[in-house]
Length: 129
Image (tube, rainbow, N blue to C red; front, side, top):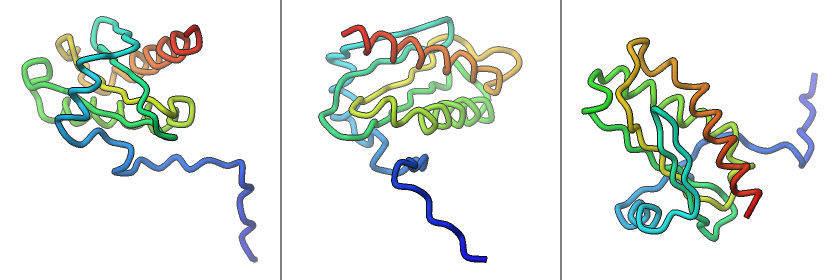
């Protein structure tokens, strides 16, 4: 059986190096002048337009807020996954996700709904402007 090719309208959901904020200058540009900020008990998301046709993600998950390496890794994994699934909606933005509150006792795995809700709020704010 020959596999059928996917239609052109199907998007790729890969997370590549081009979709990451890589150096201090890229992070500093978002920290210095974010156009949108959304937050909750656990996270602060800063965003600004990047002039590109894709979104880029930066993560700041400090050891003081999530002591265990497994929790930090789980939080980063969940943030990347939410970004990857919504990258086409977030196109043209640089985002920084900061862990602002202590990691819950259940660990980083319990924070996916929080990240999803914050990205919804960010997209709503972006749509208002």
